[in-house]
Structure formats: structure tokens, C-alpha cells
View (tube, rainbow, N blue to C red):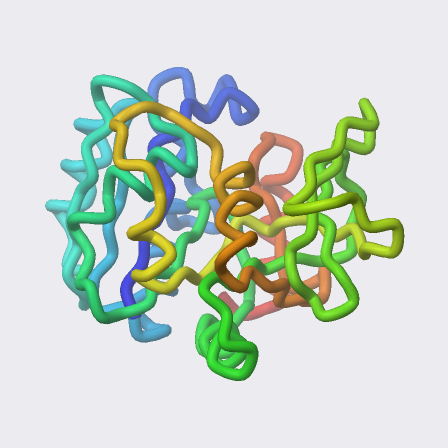
Length: 243
């Protein structure tokens, strides 16, 4: 397995902590989010981790160079333009081996999910993409059919919907957790434009000809560390899960 650790974002929700440093270098429990997640990916068997950079990119690169990670670490440079999740995966695609699955993980997410479980689910379902999801409140919902296949997307606040094919009335709405596993075959189908684009519309497009499935986990196994008020919760999460 190999991984892309999404670390390039502006961290606007974490201001003022990100006024002079990237969100990847915000500390939780005495360790940066970057270090926590990179070490976690290494422990879980990622033999190569690509870290994308944009906001305070020099700080991230210096931090990466000053540590030993136990795995190969490469940088995907987005200094010229922040590429959003889809664009970031497309831009980093050439840095990955063409024979191994690619885990994509947000740097501001803490979780106890086992990537091996996502790989096992991928093998059992014949999927090209496995999306970690849970039942929690969110305005943006991924919609899955009775077989756990991606069928659509909904903005619960505005009522906007997008569908893989025709609307399906009995779908289960689930919240995306910022963790996914993709086959090289699926990543090869993403646009390599060098321009920013979100991943969800691409997944809806690709789900017409590829198998994109949910991996549902307990909400208690996951925490978004995207706001200053969540940092005390992150400390508790780390302590309770011995991370």
C-alpha cells in the first residue's frame, strides 16, 4: 500500500493557529498532525507516502527533511495553485507505483481505522474505490444504494442533489470521513489537468463504470481536527485510544 497525505490546505478553520504555520504542523498532544498521521500510515504498511504542500510549503518540507519516517516520503508541490482533493490526487498520480492501492487521508483527521480493513473490503466487493463513511450530522452527504454502492450526493442545507444515474429514493446518507482507498486503475482515470477540482463529482462520474463502495465505521473511531475548539477533543481522543 501507498498513501497520499493531504496537507496543502489553507487551514482557515484553524485560524489564528494557521496564521504563521500550516495546519499540518499544528500540534495535538505534543505531536504535529503531520507526524501523527504520517507515522500512522507507516505503521499500517504504507511503503511510500506522498505529502502535498501549498500553505507554508517550505515549513512542511523542512519538517519532513528533519525527521526519519520509516517509509519513503515524497512531496507533491502545489505552491503555484492549491488543487483541491481531486486535483491533488491527479497531480500526485505520477509519484505512485502503478501496482499498489493508494490510500488518501486528510492530515486534519484522527482515526483508529485500519487501512487493512479497507483493503479487505475492496477485495471482497471488487471495488475500485472504498470510501470511509459514518452516520453523523453533516450538510454534505454521500448517498449509497442497498448494496453499498455510491449512488449520489446531497447538500442537506440547500437540497441540491447529484446522481450517478437516475435519482434513487431509498439511498442511505452517510458522511465522508476524509479517508479512502483507490486502485491505480481508478486513479489513472482522474483528470491530470494541473487545475483544482473536487473529488466527489469525479467519483460520481467514475461510479458509472467503476465500483465505488462505502466502508462504514463507527463515528467514535474518527475525529475532524479542523477547528480550534476541537483541539481539546483531539487530546481526549488521543488519550482514550492510546494514539
